[in-house]
Image (cartoon, rainbow, N blue to C red):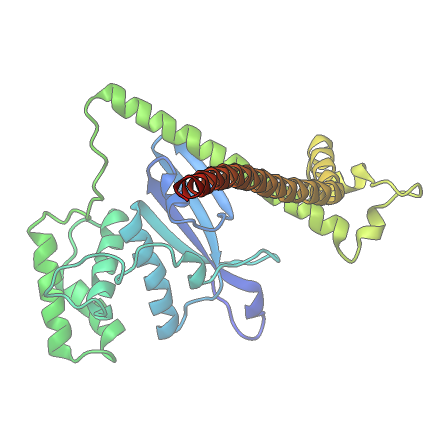
Amino acid sequence: MNYTKKNTDFSTLSTLLKIKIKGDGDSLFEYNLPNPHNYIRYNTNEFTIEYLLDGLFNTKKGMDYLNDILFRFNTSMDIIKIETKIVNKNNRKTYHLSDFQNLNSIKKNPIPNHIKRDDVVFWGIKLFVESMLKNGSGFIPYETLLDYSINHYIDKKDYSTIKSKVRSIWNWYNERDWKPTQKKEKIYKNNEEKFKGTKLNRIENLKKISLKKEKENYQRIINTITGLFSHTYLKKDGSWNITKLSNDLNLSRPTIMKHLNSYLTKKTTPKTDEKEKILINKQKILKKRMEKIQNLKKEINQTNIEIENLKNEIEEIKKEINQTEKMEKLKE
């Protein structure tokens, strides 16, 4: 597609990233990725996601940005195929690199000691080879890889350094029959365990997707009825116009009513919650006071016992004194 400055508004364009992935979809939740603009499930072990990326990547800096995203996906998931093309935004939301920061990166992944973690040239060339192989290219001629590397990285490294890196990468893949790097799969003891594990993962994924969708729907409804145009959804009697909300938000009436009731319940319950908290605090205070009173009673009882013991001792002393006085008189 040929876009020119004369007839195209570049602000309306974006890059569509289409990725075919091997797996059950667990990785989307594992890395907490944003919601894809499109999700296609082919079978239990393959699916495709699509993202609209902010930018056209028609500059060197833009290419580095795109390569970084592609590298993150390649190192985090078992990628089958990656495609990119320029499309119209159509007022749809676009994503930035920061939205994919939870994916593995050069810094997050352990790599051999002889390769620097910030070696953008090395990883850029390797990523290019991985993408070509996963797109079905098979063998890549050394000259093709060298030409690509020089065209893209001559401003970062000198010719001899680039040539050395290309030779190293080319030899590495040539020794492995030009097969793309495979992600290690989970090892199961038997087929039954594998089936159970896959089934449980699918069930968990469906639950997560359902819960996330429910939260999004709830938030959309609340934003609508509390926003600037909330008055347009009110009927004359002050109740909410469920039909208008359903049509504008493209949600079913039961969904609208469920989330509205949930919101209104939450809105009215805080007062009762506060009362309950006050009552609980008062009960705690009364309990502490009762404990203090009980302790004081025990102390008083103990004191009374000690007083009685003292009285008895005094009586004994008095008796002894009387006996002594009698003895003294008899002696006289």
